[in-house]
Each structure stands twice: as C-alpha cells, then as structure tokens.
Image 1: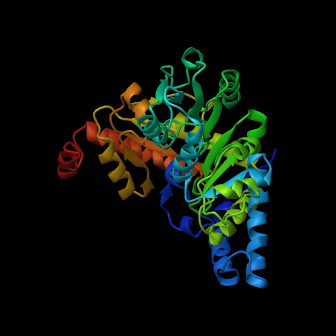
Image 2: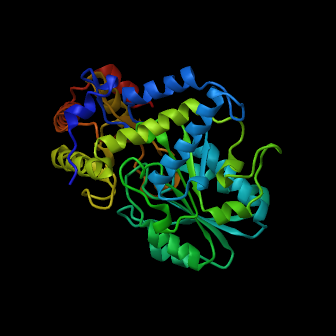
Image 3: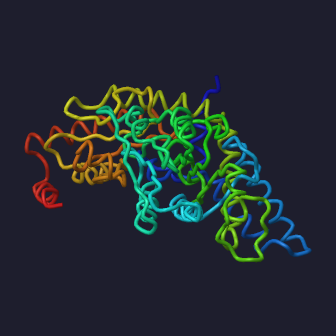
Length: 405
C-alpha cells in the first residue's frame, strides 16, 4: 500500500508554512507551489490561441491534448468525452439546457435531498421553463440515500436521475453504480455531481455507468476549473449551443464555449502529476481515513455529529453542532486560534437542510495535507471553546452578536 510522506507533501505548499490549520477542504483546497508555477509557465510560454502556424500555438495545442488525456485517465473515460468549463455550476446549467432541447412538458427529473443546489437549481429552472416535474428522492435518518424511495419515484417519464456521489454537507457517499443501474432500467440518464467525491476517492465513470459526471479541480489542489465527462454517444446526440465555426470534433469540445483558459489547463495537468507523485488515491485515502478516525475519536462529548457515525461510507467531511453554542461564534473563535472551519446554514444542500434541520452548523473538511497533530489541537480548541461558552465564559460581545445572526 502506498504511504503518504506528510512532511514532504506539506513542504510543497507555501500556504502551509505557518501554523494556521486549514480544515475547510469542501470549500476549496490549498494549492501546491508547483501548480501555481505551471499556471504562470503557460502564461509565459504559451499565451495565445489555437490554429496559428508557429510555436506558441503549437504549445497550446499540445497542452490541450495533454489536459484531455490526463483528465480521461483521472475519470476513466476517453479524452474526447471531456468538457472543460468555468466551474461545475456553469457547466451544469449549460449542459442541462442542451439536454432540454430533447425534453417535453410532463417529463420528470429526479434529484436527491443530498444534492448541492448546483445539481438541483438547473432542473428546477428547466421545470419552470418547460413544464417538467422535479421530484426529490429522500434519505434515511443517517443521511444515506433511500434507494427504495428512488425506485418508487422512477416512472416511464423519468428522463434524468441527478445525484451526488458524495454529499458536500455531511460527506455521505452514494452507491453510484446502484443508482446508475436503476436510472438506466427506467430509461433515464444518470447525472452525477462528483465535486465532493473527486478529491478523496478514485473514479471510473465507465465502470459505474455514468452518463454525465461533473467535478471541480480546485477541490483537489488544482485551479478553479470545471470538468465534465459526457458519454460519447450521448454527446453526439445533442445539438450544442456554440459559435458556428467551432469544430464538432473532438465531441467534448463542441460544448466548450469561447477560448479555453489555457493557463488553468496547465495547472490542471500539474495537479494530476502532483497527486500521482504522492502515491495517488491509495495513499490519499489511507491517510485521510487515519485523520478522520482521529477527529471522530477526539470530538468533545457535547458535539452532535450529523450523518454517519464512523469513517465507513463517507468522505472526510463532517457536519457538527454543539447544542446551545452558536456555530458562527465557534467558527470565528476557532479562526482566531488558527483553525479554518466554516459555519453556514444549508451549505447549499437545501433538501438535506430541510430534512435534518440542523439550523446552522460547523463543517469540518479534511484534506490529505492535514496532520494528526492538527486534528488533536483542533479537538482541544473546540472542547475548550464549547466548555467555556456553556460555563458562561464566552466573550460577552461576541456571544451577544452571535445570538443575533
């Protein structure tokens, strides 16, 4: 099994050079220096565009081909099935509207209560525009997807089953193969948000039967760039929104509007090289599991954890509350002590927020560059703050302000 050399890993991040502890990976990871350097190098050596008969343009053509090849390896598909875009949300709005050319009033879309709104809002807007029906698939109390409810909601009119491979709010993993199989049995497309899954687990979109899958590179130490896989035969059946001279081949390119951000493609390739150099996802997954186990074992007794209780069936993203202690106050106090964690209400998972009702909560998101010492120090700081607040030792001004947020 590949072993992660955590000291060597951290030496490659200037951002990790001080004592601040980043436990906010679901909001975006820190970036190794070599990836920033790769971005700058493209600006220095290949600032131009495709199609010219000289070196700069040739370098860009090579870079685009390299980015498609590397992304295909990352996802488990063919290079021409890759689509690059501004971000996952923009890609999803674009591609859902492209599919809409083939939809009719009365058609049905299934989404889940685990979904980030980036995989719900596009379908709700389409429903308003076209007279579609959007149904929400429920979850069990432990936040795992209710497959029986999914089966019960599938009909002959279902055209898309949209779901997350892992929930950005509570970290719960969905059995993607099972959902894809159910969708296909009903004649529907399996449309996957893998933004939160991609930084933590290896993917094979062909093996699971995905039709469309989207993720974001800045969640796995890369640039702010959206990535999409689309099954070739599906993409070939769609009429894209594009400028007329844009080539139709490779098939994924016909859905890429405008000039691509070549400097970000250079950083993306460097991101894959970085992940490979540290041992790939075998090493990442093993280390993150150790971090997650340490976090769960050391959480203060007063903390309430939402979702799955252990490390099985989840990525290392944890949603917690301390009853009676405002999470917004905790987030600010923790930041003052050198720990970066978010406080928010829905985390854009509106369906789950409605279903579970956590109000506002802290989200702790681990990345492979975190250390066991950081986890221990965080748990200690969290315990001290919770105990201090509950014993009336919170700063009066902060506590009063927290109650009015």
